[in-house]
View 1 (cartoon, one colour):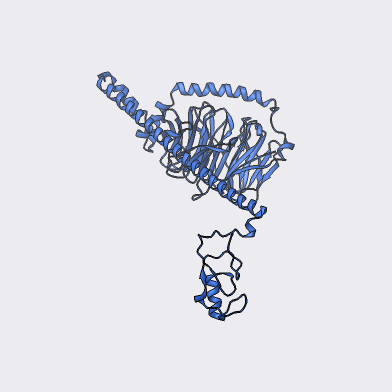
View 2 (cartoon, helix red, strand yellow; view 1 turned 90 degrees about the vertical axis):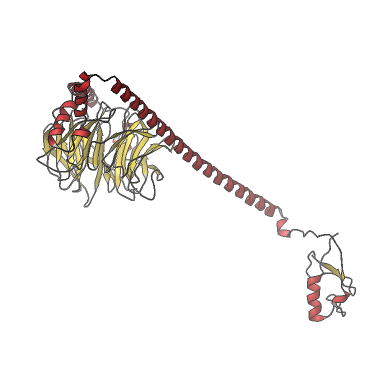
Length: 505
């Protein structure tokens, strides 16, 4: 049986009995009542504290409040407990994922360091063996090898550069470029006769909407994604370069980062995905071009072709050579396997910084943009400037060759996009954009049917008619890169708002 205080109707902690009324009270409450009234609260008879009789009981257990004994209250208590357990479990999973990523990154760094050490050890051993067995006749070979290193002999001077060109652009390389161009030209002419059946039709393209956005690829402390490219063999793999100095490979299908590549000391302004290998390239104002292994997560080659900011990057169709442009007024043609600069040329008459560079689909000519609004077309075999396209106002920000091989699209800081006919060497169309529109990226789809413009917003034009079929304004910052998926099945973009967005039906 439980004792209940006659005053509070609760189980007393220190029960006592009044001999006057034979009622049980909480001693604290009855003492207070007696001090104020001097009587028993039940019958009003005189009562003093000395008359109270303590009841010796074991520690009483207070009954639960009625609100805690109802079924809804019990269910709510269970629900609260479940929510707390699930929240704790979610926090643990997050901590586990973060720890796994940190461990994976540490393992990648360790593996990269081991590879570098092994490679250097092998090179040192080979050098020692070669030195031990070196014969006097080898002196000539050594001298030629030294002369062929433009990074050592060029030094930005004119005459040593000419020596490196003669040694670097050997007939075998020129023949390789010519053979590849012949094959590409034949394939392009065949493709140009028919439009691929898988290509998205204009009426379907006009219905594209944003279907996904990802904002966690690059650091939030230094916001901005500055460059974008898709893997030609698997357009689910997206490559981005950020203001945080990192290069990121992202899987669109799995919605997760495959690799974060760190090594540049300044922001990454240009990125390219190799069409057939798990290799990517990046360029930066730190004056270097880096070759990265995606699977290894490490830098396998550093190309030092320039002495100032690298402003443009383009991969030759053979997949073996890189074209780069720089504020040092030079363009360079480099071997990605050895990191050796094969040739390095400048237009001494112009004496102006280069702002972008892009190979023609056939690979024998390419275009560069300059800070004084010129577009220059170069012959790679002869290393000569064969055509100039004046007309823009302000530095050229982007150039793109169409896959049909005839059109060149260019953008500059004059809020316009100009289309040039490479056969007639003239401007045949100018797309005038809004005032103060910033053109940052131009790209044709793989069939040459559509042209995407990225800048203040995203606009897609259908070629030949040059009419606008799409306009996206979802980015809150300037759009720095746009790219088409295979057969224009989707469109992707990056911007200074640190987001990567995808658009499709």
